[in-house]
Length: 160
Image 1 (cartoon, helix red, strand yellow):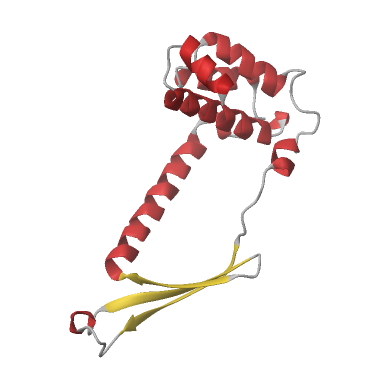
Image 2: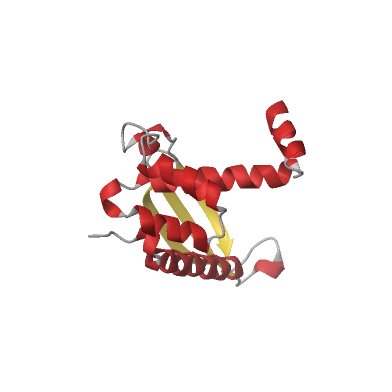
């Protein structure tokens, strides 16, 4: 849009850099507004923003949105207004070894067959090679570790 281009030019940023900044600000505010005010303190929030090297002017603005009168009237507004993707209702898998196929290279090569049923009623079946399955396992473990590390950060801890 024209307004994004004008802001990018006045701030001497590329449109891509500005898009990353706007996306980051949106994500930060969305996650902060998701939490009830009783779960974290303004001082802790400001310190965490400083750790992220966010300029002081922005810290004041973010704090006024999250803790001040600029906060949306309903604490659940951010949750209610977002669109939701279907969730996984059922997940089944099995290891399949093809004894003979039209391609001899695939003979006796194990693969993993998976079936996912989603909350919107759709079912998806797919086949994954063992190597891709191991890659998936690794990436899921990495994401879980990163989530665990994030939960240890003070901004996400419930304060008394």
